[in-house]
Length: 375
Image (cartoon, rainbow, N blue to C red):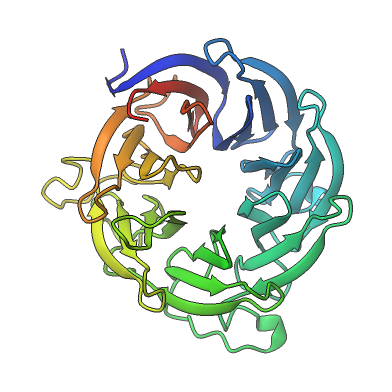
């Protein structure tokens, strides 16, 4: 029996592991980690009896492990994995009509150079993506207008000065990790951007054609984990503007205890200020290094008030309340069963639906549908 607090397992979906889950209405969209599985679409009108209604594959050498849906449009990433496989498929963003989710219809593909698109935000009109492109070092920020989803248009882009080598910019990071945008998240006329071992950036996109940096902050190499997700709350908490920043417990600069999540006060957005951190109790231990994928990975990008479910890799689902942003506290957790042939779980992504039901995907295998009493 799985370890649980204030949570109940409603159902388990037996499917390949994945990178992202997203719910639109009563339809669950699953982005898978490895070829040949691309995207699985599941009817969760009855969350105790989920029904697979459609699948989309990808060719060898690619994955589409991220998925977002709004206004009957589904976006899936196409990203190269490894060096083998069908190079002609090309990196980018697949754009589908899912008005009938049992019959997704490809409308267009936005093609990029290089390895393709990693992760992104989508508001139903604009997509805020992290592509690679010829002439650039690593992923950067791009804004796409999908007013006509059959003919997407680039609105604007932003990168750290030095990434555009094709434009003659000097590369200043010979003694550091190459820059890589993980993904932007939009709130209002701001983008909150995670940039791996180059930290976080807040961008002004009041003019989308000319994004402007407002501030940045980097906790590497003091803490060796890459910055994975910058998630601002929509409403003020305790009269302050608050953002949580999840570091990912992979790609460490040196061996260390597991990654955790930061809490930043961004009321004065030119000076993001850390006011707290949160870690699964006891996980820091005596400060000795632990193996990667033990600690933090990803918060739900759909949030219920001040309560945020997290996918915490080997620690499963963690439900954390930030009502007191100076002292976050855990309200519940759920540790999934260990996938066959694995030593421990690897919870990779999590989301919630309008009913407060939680969907937790394992990186290796399966999705758990979980009810909680904390909402």
